[in-house]
Image 1 (tube, rainbow, N blue to C red):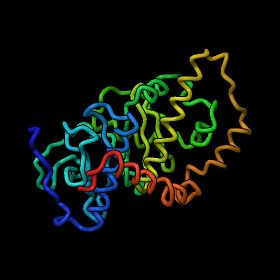
Image 2 (image 1 turned 60 degrees about the vertical axis):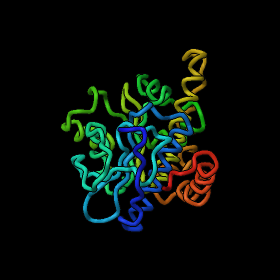
Image 3 (image 1 turned 45 degrees about the vertical axis):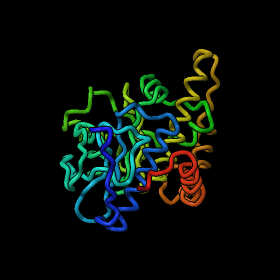
Image 4 (image 1 turned 180 degrees about the vertical axis):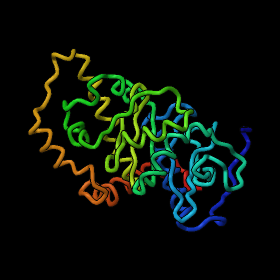
Length: 263
């Protein structure tokens, strides 16, 4: 991709609903970079395009996350084929995991997948996410696990990803690989990822004292905190908090520190 290739605004060429999805997704890419969760040009975040066509938005391959704008996002079908003219191309292999979740979960309008150091580290630990922090206990019941099968090039893996995620969980540790969250909105996918990544980081820091030196909370306390956290349902207290307070705050932060995402 040439350095001087600037995205041409597509705002006038798409519906108002698609433009909102584009802006929200561009926000997610910029927020991922801002939090240091990006992996150079790798990993992906996708957003279903509102409407009946089963189209999705994903990042142009080769563009850094802090460069992505609403107009530069590429629209593809379930097989990763580009369906709207664009000067950019995508990494079809990167859409394997995302298409699996989108195809089988109507509530999964947005799918985030990351390769952070702490996320990969916890995904590689046999016990997975431990109940050793308030953050972990708030989300632990909502986490699924999927065993590593190599770089996600095999479309057959999609069936196993979907089976492991199940019908109602929204977060996943991809063993030896990284983290994944999904949500009905970009904001909920982000909040779930924020909690998951923080819980993983806390675990790695705590385990520096050795496994025997870490205090693990009992089952009753785990259930209590899980209920208080309200992270599982799309219409939970955390959903309201996210939509009304967290997402607007993140938008203000981006407007200050990474403007231009909505172009």
